[in-house]
Image (cartoon, rainbow, N blue to C red; front, side, top):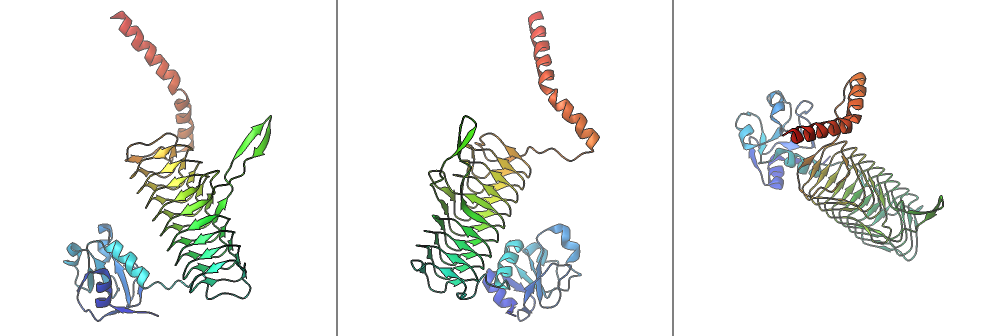
Length: 341
């Protein structure tokens, strides 16, 4: 088990220690559950009551909070960011693969960088390029002409179709499929005619993609996921979607073909974005929202109704259907009043 002194942790965070710098830390924990040898954090004042009673060996605190704490503290401006960085430092997650398993199937034309690891029963196709220290988990399929940048990780059973490019320092979780065909068809007298999807997928650096997410390849041009994007589990991105830098897409959200999501956006879980529209940089879409028109100005957008008793919901639904009739009646009354004047 790796451990660090508080002075080493403070140096890593560019922070200061209040208390005993020689205390050693081997893991992170919540204020309520922490024990000796663990470090916790306080980022929300509503948990301040747990601070004095914590058994943590140290706590990450803001300067203001540290003034009122008698125990060991690592003091920095943003304790939550500090927690994230310490958690990385103390991370015990095993690698997706160690070395190259003898059951892996690797095409002779594939190029493997130094330190590449490939798990059991993984398949590496023709002309694949894997950068340095790439990890390909057990059962993954990496299709023809795929390029994966250095230090990227595919967890078990990820599938990358042909002509997918993944940048450096990316993480793709189990069950995700990247580069499957977009939903492209023409209709000829009731019969669906498939349109071959000949674009690819281009994913930038430092992108993390959750489990069982689907990212379709482009119909002609590429589907694009730019640097720093984070994507939750079970997200659907259709063909030719473009997602701007450092945007976050929460679980079960869906994005129809050719929509463009700006930079630094947050799209809440179970949201749906219609095709061929754009969302401005810095937009926050609440969970469960249906986006059906272009969003040109950043802000917070919502559309889901709140949960309520079923009888009340049914009554309100009827009233909602009557809104147009009510509008027309009000419009006619206004017209009558204006004509009387």
